[in-house]
Picture (cartoon, rainbow, N blue to C red):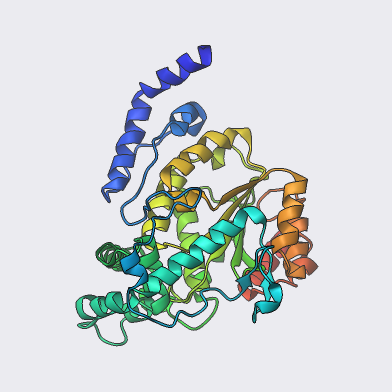
Length: 399
């Protein structure tokens, strides 16, 4: 009863009221205030935030899937040839693998509904693609010169992502996309949208000026692809010397721009969050408040899974607050791996790239301080050239 009384008391604090105010601002498309919240003092308030369903990223509930039912009128919508929506097909234990023409992998049983749900939502969105594309062309792109970066960004893959995020509501998808185009012009004004479209694979990475000066500033690397064809991003706050949320956010967005050809290419990422070395300086709720609206509104459908390794007790209130801030589809893709058995089971199912698997097995055992990574021979075996070069720079600075 004592604990319950403390919890009720937390609801009455000014900090709780401030956080609720900021949640309302996010829901209405507003900006965060400049007031700082000390996570070490106010963790209970953070854990009590209500569920936030952001405009353009919500779905009616289906059991364990979080997707609205598809009306019969949508199923009978324009007949189109639906391409495969991922590089690989997946099979459940009940399916006949011999009937599949593409390379098969068997996901973990608990992930199968999520993967199938994503595929069904993509297939449903295909029925509205022509209508959406026509409207985008006539109302957003027609007056722009052909060289304008918005033309490249508004690819078929982008339009499908926004239709999925809007549950096939063309009006909602259009508003989301129009807001994103405005946001991209403002957010990437320093780098310039035209530079994000550059063909040089490392162009966006070099735009992180902090990493160019000190490669230990941030820790987020594309270390390969998993069995489902998804990019695998490894991050660890304990290995980053820069703790400013806005800087870390910009670094991650530039990496997403690089991986997906300035946002125009299809595909998803699996974001691996390693909590080794995580401390109070990393426990900043403002990072979450910055990231959630940007990811949901401007990078919809980019996250195939978010994996959390060994979350510490100090982070658990922030973890629950984060879950309250995202939609039900995203919540279903967050997975905790807090035992060696669970990590090995996941690795056996998805980390089929030997070089990536060896690097991850090693990094999860490394001391988590800025610049500390596995032996450079393991890093040099990774596929991504930008990741290899940054890890080599860290190795040189640490030697």
